[in-house]
Amino acid sequence: MSSESPVHWAKAYPPAAGQMQSPVDIRTRVVSQDPQLLQRPLSWTYVPENCKAVLNTGEGWKVLVEGQGSCLTGGPLEHSYQLIQFHCHWGKCCSSGSEHKVDGKAFAGELHLVHWNVDLYNSLEEAIASPKGLAVIGIFFQVGKDDHKELCKITELLHELPRKGDECALTKEVDPSQFIPEVHDYWTYDGSLTTPPCHESVTWLVFKKPVEVSEEQLDKFRCMSSTSSPKAILNGEPVPGKCLQNVRPVQPLNDRIIREAPY
Image (tube, rainbow, N blue to C red; front, top):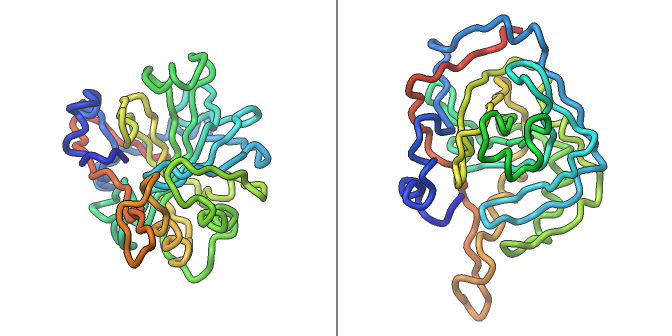
């Protein structure tokens, strides 16, 4: 998220005023079933040892990935896409943490696996601003009784990232495929990055079924600092700003169609 309110993003980032912005509210009554999505089933391959480090971006955490060996294909995708990073969005409470909504309902959080088109483009920077340049998998988090085991490998390191810009190596291999729900029903539509520069280069793949994480894991997200230096001093101790929420409001769907794969 930018430090400036999302309503003002278009002043500095003109794509944010476009007609294909994300996230959106997925209204299930008007979603279009598309059996053609099943002719080329969605397929993913990830390399756990290529998840290298976790970074405090100032808006939340992001896992940095060396994409060699990873591949996302099929469904609405006409090309091969390589994983470059994944990150999460959350809110002050568990009823306002996801960016996409379903029939007006938000989930506790939303994980984004970000891939770039390695068939058409030579670099991530080129792909970000280009048609069909990115494919992002969205996975909803909901609160359950137990920790999500794969997420623990990230949350156990967040205390080592006290300031914006801090980075530490992952001490355990993280397998991105472990975040994908067991049921592979998904919605897909053409949209944008949900953070500046908001380029409309994203094919979204939003899984319907949420995965469970614990309240304690979400609380660790909210304890992250959003600044590179303390904002205040209290009783002689620095008080950093906290990443309590990093959610962009839903954007108009306009004339776009959301399709679903009827598994």
